[in-house]
Image (cartoon, rainbow, N blue to C red; front, side):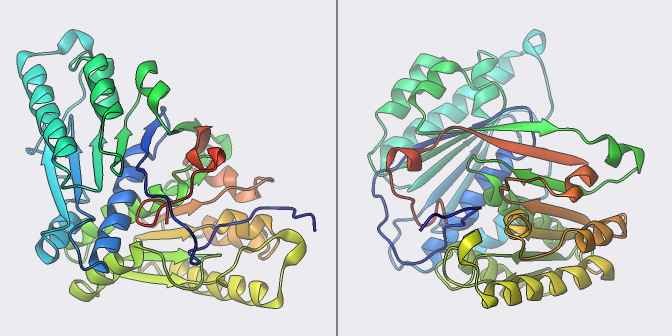
Length: 378
């Protein structure tokens, strides 16, 4: 049978890979560090449900010094308090932008301090995932030797996942990457003409769309924890019914501690939906999800709403476009809407996006027959 349309791989039981991969997220579009945070959320969720300490994560952040607060800090701190054996966070550098002609001795020392931590973590065997957030611009600025970094990453323990993020990844790093997603920005004159803000869309064939949305959710949850009453988050996910999604455990842990901050809903069956194999349940579940989302958008109660995999749901014609357009046009100004998923035919609401990142796939290990991995890919 010929399958047409967009299929979303669900978390059904399947074979998983054991060998860790090197992931690179770069480009001038938004979503790179968010994707890294999404992997952190998934990995912690996997660790919560795994009795061993084999799912520890290191979040190592270059160019993001400790003197500045970030939205996600509250959520990460809460997860560290509840599960100190699952996550470590280290920051280095100064928390401000600077160019090649503004580099100081402090910048070089901080970059090297971070790299010393990275080398030790990679060699230790203590971590399942090491995130090197913003290492790409560090390499582009010449603050670390590219050849040494590449050599270290190539000799990493077999099972270790490495996530490298930031603009201007050097070619030598891209050459050894197993996955390379480039975030490409799109600009929509309609959104600018209508003074629309707070609508973000992540689409494209590359990995990082839902993962970026999960990172955005982590940031919003952290903002709500750090500043009580400032935000409430809804994570609404289509085409992802059933169980087995590793982020669920981490989100549930945050819900338990901060029930006033985050709500999480899934809809759909535990199976891939193709255009020529749609079932009545698929339509019912898609509409149920939209009813929840529509009310949440209109209410103003939620300051951040994640509409994960809405794009393929519309592309599969499980939902009409016009009600979504109207709901987005009427949303409260201070409500952020994040919409994800690939689609063959961009729907009309793309024109309303103030931020639109196309995740372009240069490399993906799945295209080489490598299996996906629980706690990283889903």
